[in-house]
Length: 132
Ligand code: ATP
Image: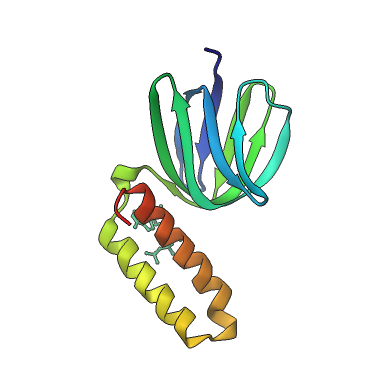
C-alpha cells in the first residue's frame, strides 16, 4: 500500500513525523480524507481529532486548529496545539470544559467566541483521550 509522509508541527515542537496510508481531518467544509498523490492544497483545519491510518493501525491526535498543507511528497499540519491521546490530562480538559460552559451560559458577547473555541478544544481532548 502506498504511503506519504505526515508531519504535525506545533509552535512548540514537531509532534509527529511518520509514513501514513491515509489521514482524515476536519476542514472548514467538513471531513477530508487525504490519500497518497492527493493534489497539492492548503486548508484551514477545525479543532478536531485527526485520524492517521497506517497498515492495520489507526492513530488519533487531538489537533486544535491550524492549517494542513498537502504537498507532492508530504502532508504538513501546522497546528496551534496538538496532543497524543496519552499526553492529554483529562482533569485539565474537564476543568476547561466546565469553565467554557460557564462563560457560554453567561452569553457575554466578548467572551463567547473564545469560550466556544476553548470548549471545542476541551471536547476534542476528551474525545481523543477516549472518555467523553
Ligand atoms: P487550558 O485552559 O487548560 O490551558 P487551552 O485549550 O486553553 O486549555 P491551549 O492554549 O490549547 O490550552 O494549549 C496550551 C498548551 O497546553 C499546549 O501545549 C497544549 O498541548 C497543552 N494542553 C492544554 N490542555 C491540555 C490537556 N488537557 N492535556 C495536555 N496538554 C494540554
